[in-house]
Length: 130
Image 1 (cartoon, rainbow, N blue to C red):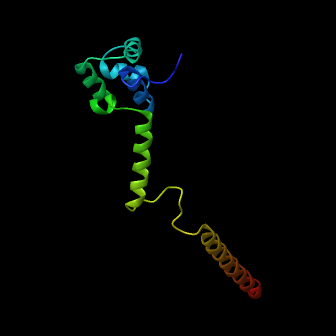
Image 2 (image 1 turned 90 degrees about the vertical axis):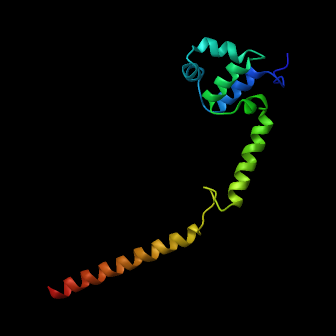
Image 3 (image 1 turned 45 degrees about the vertical axis):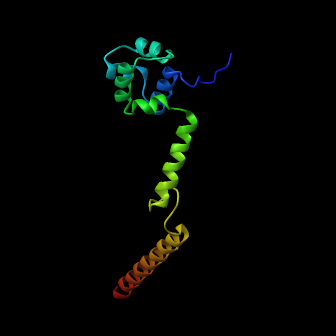
């Protein structure tokens, strides 16, 4: 038996969107005023009436069209475009340094050496006064 998603299996699409939003069935059930078993049955349904789908979309924070047109491939494309465009518009990646880390290490080392020199001078001055 194939585990591939049927293109129009709305229940599985709802399940996948819920999982991507890191939401448990219980949380969705609470938002819809129902129980976890009803959500489980809903996610196993191939079709769902439009009024119920609108309520589910609202609870998930997406549009009805987003649920109907959802595919994992579309999600990957969306996130790839989102990150590609955000970097193109001046946002920096949290993994890209805007400075050379080695320069910072050298700067800190030089400051440490300067503080040690000042400390030594102070101690020498104290010794001379005794």
